[in-house]
Length: 124
Image (spheres, rainbow, N blue to C red):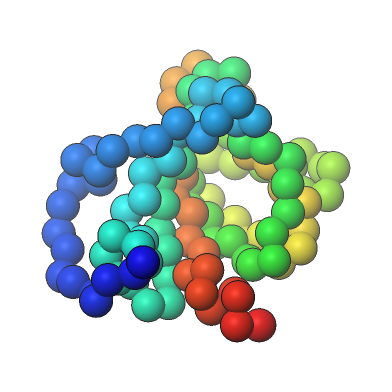
């Protein structure tokens, strides 16, 4: 259950990195700002970290994604086509579009992922 919004200030590395699961080898997710833990009413912000050779699932959502590459070399697959991405790149994935991120380098590929909170999606 979501709690009331609270002020939060912390370094991202202090937030636990959860394993994504078998469908995403080498991927962890840090829930930086989250409706459940912080009470954020409209927006969730996550840090995904992909180890060399790792990738997210090939998937689509009912919601858009706003992504910002922090470090490393990666590729984003959108509807079957791969595009190289790197630090400073901004990626917008519209709702319903198939996508996947994968590490294309020798170091951790790290990016921010912003999405609307799930209760807003459920109301649509």
